[in-house]
Image (cartoon, rainbow, N blue to C red; front, side, top):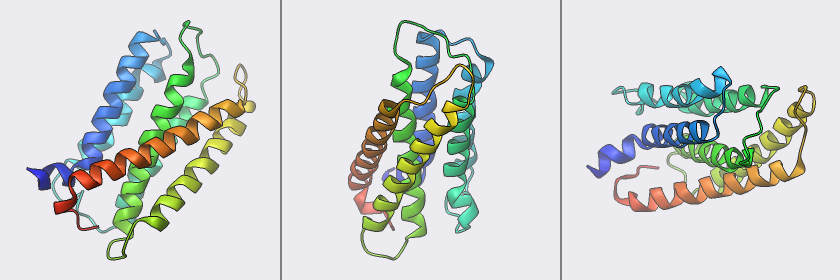
Length: 181
């Protein structure tokens, strides 16, 4: 059972992220169509990675595709110009999105780093890329009508990235007996 769960770590995390996002979209009453379908878009790679053989693939493209997919979804969500005021801060999305991004990214980099001792380089690379992505995402929002760049959002994104790394390390330690990387 542990082996099955570890092999489908990304799938499980995608489904959990999609569920949390769906709950937030419903509770925040976000009307934009893309917000409504975003939980499904977030879960889609989880379905694909559940297919036997995909998760064990050694292809760099397949290993990194969840990171690319998720980063694209974040960028598309940032492109929506009219974010409704709901009375609840939209900042709840930032740490959740970036925790998921860093979790998935670290898992991918750990797979690419197979055979090398430790996760120091993948962790540093994950945090660096997530920080740069957060800065670029806020810069991108500066040019979107109705949106603005907020340094506090970058801080929330970095905090979420650190949380995702911590969650990944906890999950990895929990399934330590079955990890190959």
